[in-house]
Length: 417
Ligand SMILES: [Zn+2]
Image: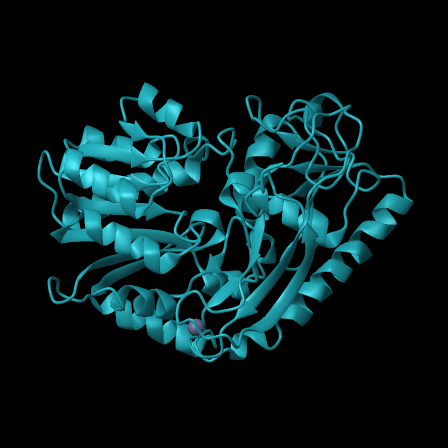
């Protein structure tokens, strides 16, 4: 039998500054890949689970996980995530287009390349704005993009792919990477690949989930194997600077419970906006830079789990039924870390058309069912797994006719009437 490629690789050094003195912030558990979802009714079989530990580099302050799982395991061609299905993402991408067009500026016919372009939602904005666009996307989400006339290459973004694109399409005036820069194994190699494709006057825009709100609002549930790194601006500035790129503008954005948009260009080619120093000062003040913010992080996460059980125990004792609302990737970490099972959550509900319907939440026997169940057979409680958009979700579900109570599991578990 030929040797299979290893499914995982321990990350024992900092992926930004290469220091090998990482310290542990939180061991989340042995967590299954979030797309391991067997069909409802199938016989339980052996499932993979990988250790998930959040680590911090004391030398540069960078935060990452301690294990890389092979992308073929995490992002199979059948990867079910479609970005266009989320309203907040659609609005954010429209905003990114408007801001980029004003800052760069972009001319008709300029090439815009999106790394991890998913279903083409972001690039469609630039296409409609008169740019040439090219998506690079390994999953079948690229098929959806092509249907929208967004030209898409089915590939992982590598140096070879960057060379090929540059040869066939010319250099890019803008390269974007939205919620994907933390997913790729070697950040320095990605930046080098980007430089092969970026025009000398070009701009690289990166959007990543942001460490500052992660710590402040206890979003440990955004820690999963797809996310290798949890960026703060200090680490991004250092990473890009090593490759001659200078951050010239940043903007905190609301996606995924708090992200940051970072604009970078060749050193000395752009005026540096005050937003950069302002944001770095906020990180200093919040204890992100020197690590003070993490002294209480683990204890707060543990306490939130205990508080959730204290809240749920009397409800279950009284015979209440609880449905989970939404099965985003973060729900898998929350459910597996807190140990919620099908005796506590009857089911998790998803909107019609979701690829996750009629499958089990990874690592559990909690079925993912159609949202109609919430109204046809309403429970006493609905637990919001996309709690970072709790206010919007509660308003929508009330409008649709749900009359039960809501449970918001984080950062402080609470019941909302
Ligand atoms: Zn480091």
